[in-house]
Length: 163
Image (cartoon, rainbow, N blue to C red; front, side):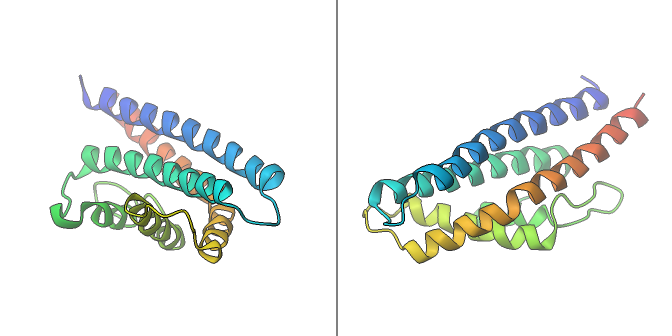
């Protein structure tokens, strides 16, 4: 497989990830609008926590594919944070940044939350934190897709150059 094929393979990963993110977004937005009651309950908290966790995991998986394609150098001790940090960097003569600083800050919150939920076994969620994360999700999901689309356009240009 040549470089152009590798680029197109990465672009296919991006398209698949965007499709999954959009499914999660549609579900989560509908849940917030139609099934989230004024009185917070444990079931709702669990749906919110799992939706945010799945959303971030999908993004992180895409970022890992991008990192493997371009630089593949992550701090093994804190690779999740290292990976996220790399997506803000423009690597001269290699690739542009994938996400903005503002997106990085919000995704950092999602990363911390996902880590928390992996080791939290109780059912009494902090609703202030959940509301904060829902607001951040609502603020960022369109911006994130736009940033990933811009990166995909960069890849399309690279693929054209490889002809």
